[in-house]
Image (cartoon, rainbow, N blue to C red; front, top):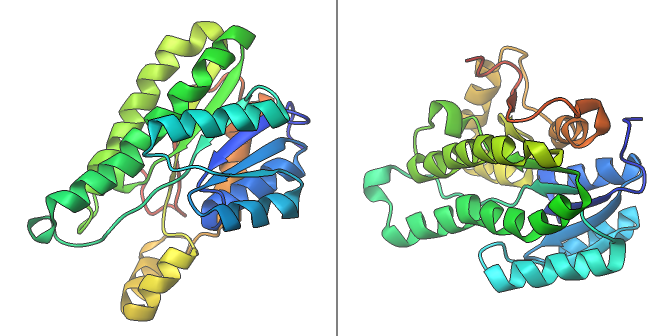
Length: 247
């Protein structure tokens, strides 16, 4: 068991499925009280029921909706000790073929969404003098990724945002870190595999450890950074990619 998570309140966005669900499950297994936040209310409630948490609908692009969902989660569970910004979305295509509508959606969900959620929990964390914020970025934000230009920009923005917050919030004993997953066995990736099985095979061959990651492996890294075992770690970016990126 990791230190300092029992009875702590953790809010996880995009936690109805995939990596977010795995994070919610792991945090609950470590004793945290988890708010499962997702734009798909049914999946949020299903995950919450499984782990004994609270499931709420949250659209991270809706500032008022974010504040309302955070307030309700805190009313039911207590003040947030941990925020995991996991919710994300992408559309893979060459930049010159992408539309401004797509750019706006990618930026709204992947960059502004975590900013909205972070702002919604900060006053309480500062008042209580503690907190853990872990945001899910991507190695696309560190090294770029063909077909994901605006997504890469958004995910790079999360890294810069988190490093700055880590400096500003350190005096309040709030740590801010980033996890960058590599290719991971999610419903999204399997959908890509159905359309282009050669792509997934190529990704698998490119990973030095010779396989695609599992959501639970991302969850383990996030849970560590949310725990007291990582109390002296802030402003860091951790790739969980089987060695695909090492820079």
